[in-house]
Length: 289
Image 1 (cartoon, helix red, strand yellow):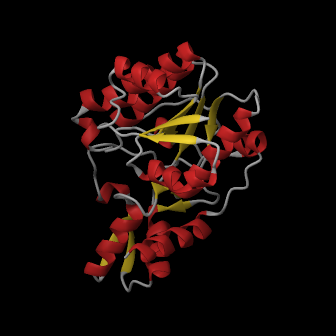
Image 2 (cartoon, one colour; image 1 turned 90 degrees about the vertical axis):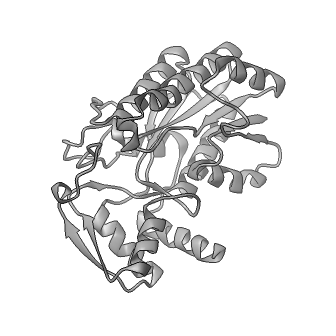
């Protein structure tokens, strides 16, 4: 099976690459903008045809949440037009498309974990474009799968874990928001889940539509930061602050915990708790240093 992975230099793309050698009969094509610009429909058509692609895993996204408030055109081009182009080609070629999305499609006023059928109402340009991308994918290629995730981190690239480690080593104390609640998600676990979905779909299963995936458990950014310092053995005091004390250009959902019952049932996934996965990621970071 020939699999195209877009956005391959990002956190999820790198975790997929790391696991690709476990699938000996699958041939992966890892691309980023330099190899394949998904904003250009003709380029996508050419690449898929030339390489006989049978599955597309779209990890490409404009994810700079605050910069998106002013870089609206680029954010839209990647998150909406790019997703639409992949869906057009997938539909025309009758190939599998797995598209990644975000908890930021919700406004965060819920008090129970969000289910896939809950009404989306994004607060930011980033969230709005990701929702628009979802809608394009589902309208054009209804057999596709959309996986929404949250609070992604890994040993690759820039993310909250590595930022906290860097700041914690430089400072005696940090202030971190405690009134935004979600679930930290290791991109390695998400990569495993997506590859399991690909394997299941290969058998001709009928699952389609939107799914939620994050690690298990619930945390605030403050809780997350405290755990990072403890596991990294960094002597830095973390103090809780309210969102209003740390204003950002783009508003964030106050509560974006995802209900994962559907994906666990349909794809027989065993999802680890976020603290267990954080231990694995921090060990991976330490091994790279």
